[in-house]
Length: 290
Image 1 (cartoon, rainbow, N blue to C red):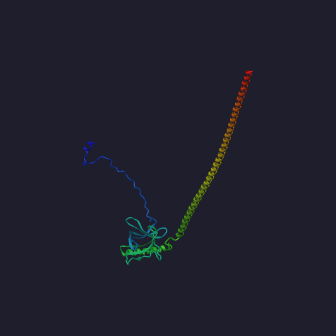
Image 2 (cartoon, rainbow, N blue to C red):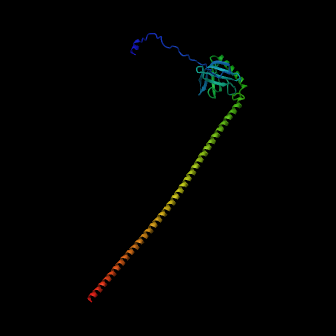
Image 3 (tube, helix red, strand yellow):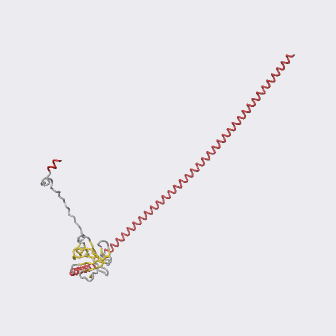
């Protein structure tokens, strides 16, 4: 290791090593913008403002577009923020009493304002103002915007939806509502089934408790009967024992009487013998005297 350090020269050109970098294959990815089925009806660089909390606030800067759908023939307004490409305005142009009526803002010829139901984020009523660099650009925008409105009048209903699509959407809504109702009904049925199952379980538990209580009562009754029978048996045994004791006492008395009688008989016999002996002695004495 020490020799390697001594041989190292930081200023020497390095000529050895593997300098072949691996090839990286980059695949082309098609990015869809949602504008593939549309053609450009008009475009112009502009700045969009939105009315929020009592004042105009900048919404985005970029290329405003009026896009004509190739199949449906409908025209929409679209503006993407040029730095982020985020959609900041997206709606059909459908002029009626309330919506898509262009008016100059604060008397300026470069700015036009309008109210519309926008779909850039979520469906929401918005008030927009579009500012151009020149009055001519703003005038051309108004002209094309109004033309687009006339085209769309033939295709949109009063709600700004494509004619013929309204019924389909309503039908879809009905289907969704029906599905939701069926889902709720199924959930309610499941709840009822679970409720019934729980009630059945509770009922079974109560029946089981009652059964156990009855069995316990029967068991206690059997125990009581058994105890009573045991008491009776004990009393019988006690009575037998007492009777046995009485019999033993009687036998003892009889034996004692027999012994006393034997003693008396023995005593009487001895007395008789004594008398006979005395009588014999007296007779013997009388004989001697004679």
